[in-house]
Length: 218
Ligand SMILES: [Zn+2]
Image (cartoon, rainbow, N blue to C red):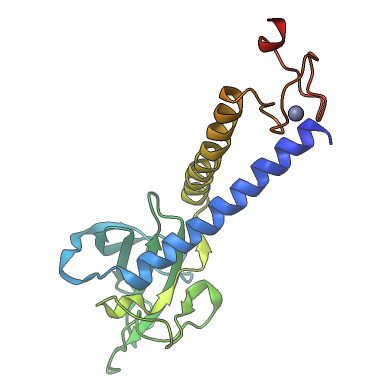
């Protein structure tokens, strides 16, 4: 088999493995890490994190809840001058999950009307896949927060790529350890490091054709 193709295939397998672990870790952070009191809260004003319906001001107030493996943003703004007077505010909820970088996220927008008791933006069921994936009831629940009922479904490309490479690299390294040990053991026992067949006097292994340096020269 072409050596180049072999390496490309090997790298692809480990990256796929890294991507799977990445998503599992991000979703695990949402499902199993308790939120609540440990979250560090920051408040301020900034542009919307995700797009909002036309006509709304670019700036919005925000509250950010940051903790291990999860970041949540609650943004809000008043309607613009001359806008619909029945509308009280626009809210946006962004949840980002992943370790070491945030790799998955969800976004929800919701307009609140005057005189309408606001249902929480993060409590309602997702209207589309971009708004998250509802966690089935049979999943054992360890989180404490109402925010955690939905899994983020959108990919934050930079964080996703970084995490995938990191997890794929760790998996690669872990997979290399037994191979390295086996090669060393075979070398010490005077066996071909490639296939484990006993070395003869030939400069190459008579079983697999692997070059056998040094030992043969004696
Ligand atoms: Zn061999």
